[in-house]
Length: 481
Image 1 (cartoon, rainbow, N blue to C red):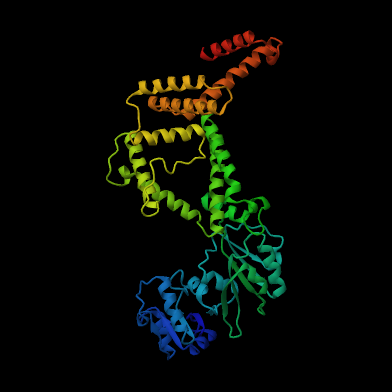
Image 2 (image 1 turned 90 degrees about the vertical axis):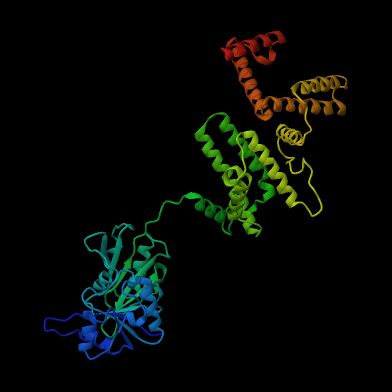
């Protein structure tokens, strides 16, 4: 692999080229100029040398910096290359940075009077804008912003380089990219790209090596990707002991708890609390996804891709050609699609039943509702609500006929509750929500009874039934009014 140099063909007051530039041109295997009729090509010809143009390399005049870089790197595989220019030394922004990123041996520059000049020219720095220029000797006590371009000059040996690196690490990440320029024995300057971590190893014999540090505009950590990253850290080798111990099974109860707490915030119409609780639910999702990734079973991308596909599949009236004018139509379509999914997933030759796939760990009322709705959808249904009321009366009579506390009584209580769930379904009422609402109402009224008793100097558990009934009636009256 040969070297790559960028040589500015500037003439002095007497019309002569800088000797360092001429020497570098003479030692090149290939000299490259932008165009055949440009000033750089003319200057090379006057020196009795020949040059290749971008066109000779198969590069169009308006080619991107990446294409120019690729062509120069290709030439450098065969020998030493010089990119000759006149005037401002770099013909297109991005060429130097592209070469620095990919040229193994760095990039040389001729002629230049100082490392600072090299960096200013090579990196197109606007010295009237956001550039801080500091000497290495004063850097330790300096204050500067990582939002600006920073140039540190005067790095003359490895000791100073280490001191500079330590200071810069207070502001930048170890992997932050920097550009160094140091002097060459031939009189030019060598540009190289490093990370800040590598700066300590840069020991230059040049009296005034300079370092360019690009701005570091690091956004405040946030967003879904940051949450995924944090959970991976917590589960990592040096992470949180509790998080590392968790499994899908151990986290199951937490998923349920967090979901219920989110529902409670909804019922309280506390939107601030809801946002917080939804974050807790999301945490559980990401934790399970991280465990799945560690087990090479699935990852968070699989989870997201799965739900996107499911939403599209179950909304053919939005993403397909199906029709659904009402919510009832949507539910019918949804149930039919789910049954189709279960059938596709069943072993060959088996057809899943109507009630297959209903999650048995659901709260009992919710579980009963799903069973009832699925069975009704299959045609197992009363003709009207009167038939359901007759069934309620029948189940109550059967319950009355059992011995209290017996297994038969428990069975009949279940039958009564299940039939009431069917009544609610016919009335368009969610049984789970209805009972939760009643529980909340009972708590409010009972707490009011306790308040009434305390105001009268009484203790509620020492009052007789008639007195408690009066407190209850008063609590109901106040609530209704």
